[in-house]
Image 1 (cartoon, helix red, strand yellow):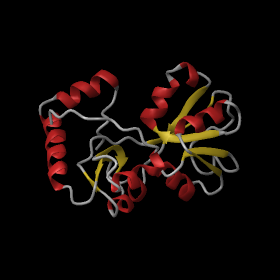
Image 2 (image 1 turned 180 degrees about the vertical axis):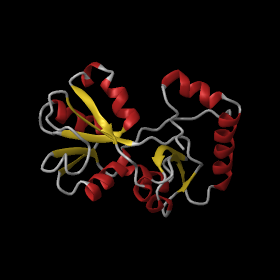
Image 3 (image 1 turned 45 degrees about the vertical axis):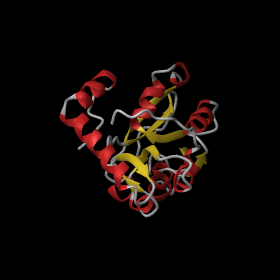
Image 4 (image 1 turned 135 degrees about the horizontal axis):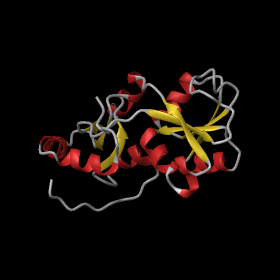
Length: 195
């Protein structure tokens, strides 16, 4: 878009109300879901990755199914699709929501959780860092379209069609001119756009 942006830091669980209140114009990195689309408008998706589960390296948990995690403490970031997914699909686990994913991962590192669920990119990148050296990716999960929606987009106030059209055009141009692939290949060994 060739637009200079001012970045505003906002806790995730208050990000949609803050957007609705006009505290900022756009909210990046929001999964497009029918429930959220009732409150805000979305651009086209710009990436989609599956959810994943990480565990300590010495964990006895061997799989990612609800049965594998039955009776285990599973940490998630509150007010996210991961919390919704865990609560609906992993009812036999103790689901523990945290204000941030970092706090959930810290509690797992400190032995207060058996596993964490988050986006596969986020967990993979965390495991590459010193603070993630304790742990391993147990595996990715098949997204549920009813919960995970079509992907991640940029949330906008309802009715802001002019900004939505500009952002959509920019996303489409990046995909068409090869810049998206260039950026993707620099950071990831897979296509983050998804199918």
